[in-house]
Amino acid sequence: MQDLIRQLLAELGEDPTREGLLNTPKRVEKALKFLTGGYDANIDEVLNGALFTVDYSEMVIVKDIDFYSLCEHHLLPFFGKCHVAYIPTNKVIGLSKIPRLVDVFSRRLQVQERLTNQIADVVRDAVKPMGVAVVMEATHLCMSMRGVEKQNSFAVTSAMHGAFRDNARTRMEFLELIKLRSAVPGIRESAGYACVGDE
Ligand SMILES: [Zn+2]
Image 1 (spheres, rainbow, N blue to C red):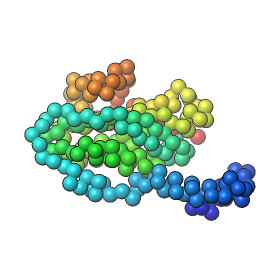
Image 2 (image 1 turned 135 degrees about the vertical axis):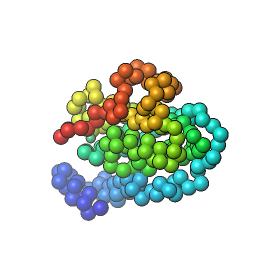
Image 3 (image 1 turned 135 degrees about the horizontal axis):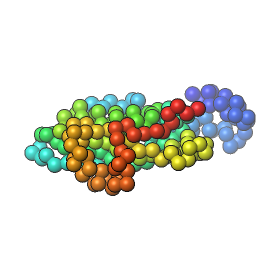
Image 4 (image 1 turned 45 degrees about the vertical axis):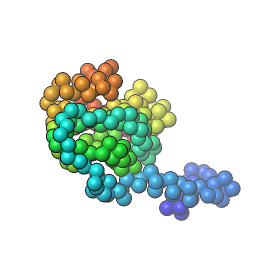
């Protein structure tokens, strides 16, 4: 990877041998490996021992989870907050595991819509709840830094399954609890517009 990064620096018009850039290929490789470390993660291992049988059927919400990802179209960061909710049937997942799952899927090359769906799907498949909902709000540097469609550089995406899809009151309760009231009328399955069809 370091040779490629030296080549990239030269293509950008830089001198990869100048002092400030000498260790850059090594640093970039290390950073990229960390930022895409989600490919190596094993979901079963992450979830291992974190599922508990309980008699609890109220909504569980973990909100304001910070996440950082890289858009697959430009390899530039997008980042923001993720909110995850589910209604257990007889199983819950350790609360600290939810941010860990968000990290696993964020540390890959992503589009926000797929990232949102992947988090919802893994909770649905692991916990088998009555419903699961994921909302992600993010700023995309590929839009804000390049000055295109600045008004859309903040994107909201959602994935709703089960009770959150079928029951408007459940969905509203969740959206109110994560304080997205202003976005309620517009929020829908895959309501994102980040990066789509963009050069
Ligand atoms: Zn992008």
